[in-house]
Length: 388
Image 1: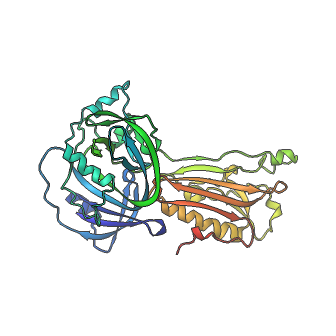
Image 2 (image 1 turned 120 degrees about the vertical axis):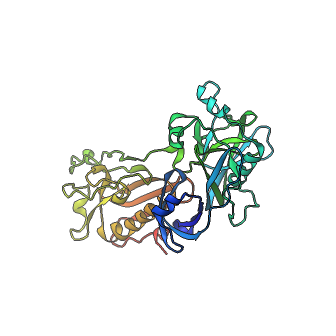
Image 3 (image 1 turned 90 degrees about the horizontal axis):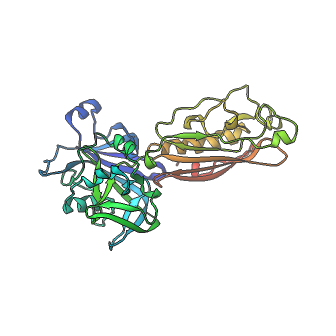
């Protein structure tokens, strides 16, 4: 068993305990104090993790069900509170955590109905997901709990792809029904608790599903992107600035902004194409102007897509201000998926933007960034983008 720490943005972190077979240890060769690169997209974990401790394999508890093979302690997060009809206590869960939404008209619900979950197992898993106060220092015995799971689904990825019943908790609505050990139960209210608090997850052997809460609500251990979402980049459109003035400048207007959902799988973008002449290019000094990406190359942004390129003061707007903010987003991708909106702000009479607004939100509420960068030679790097 190995204990690891993955640093995240703003002094946050993910602490993990992984139960792995000898082959894993031979491949990774962990050493206390060293680092191991982890790529666990399903758990929302990617990056160089610090090895804190290595211990022997604990005794595997006998019994039915599946072994808990890993535990994850996130230093901070935000939880939804789902009030369940007939239950005194709400289910507390992060917005990105998949929950099985019952659908009586869908035969795929046979999967949920096939699970025979014992009350003790449900309570054990529930303690982790619901942040029971007795969880201290996250010193959990990985194999002291057994999580019930169905043996009819070969992999968790296949499960999520085949069954639309898996819904991220943040997409559930009042009135939706959930699968419990006693049948379907209706959500009577949903509230977002904005108070930051530690959040926890477990990895379960095999199908990666288990029951949570005292009523045994069916959940999946995937804590990566909401609803197993894939990355996308939407470069938006041009406004009518060039058309209204009888000029197109190679464009036909000014870029209106980029909307993207970034995951660790988002491919690297490309550098700026020198053949592009963005609006307002001639308004900037020839020795201090650059073709600035709205969505950065390191975040997947294209340098040949005209809708992604604007005229920026190279110093200090493009570098270091934009660059530093882009670095913070790239670093945060190691811990969660990020939704990004980059919007240029324009003076009605000029082709170049007067400022760039960047909004970035992690789908598990670990990372947030909302800044504005002036497009000027004296631009300052926003404090939120500076690395201490």
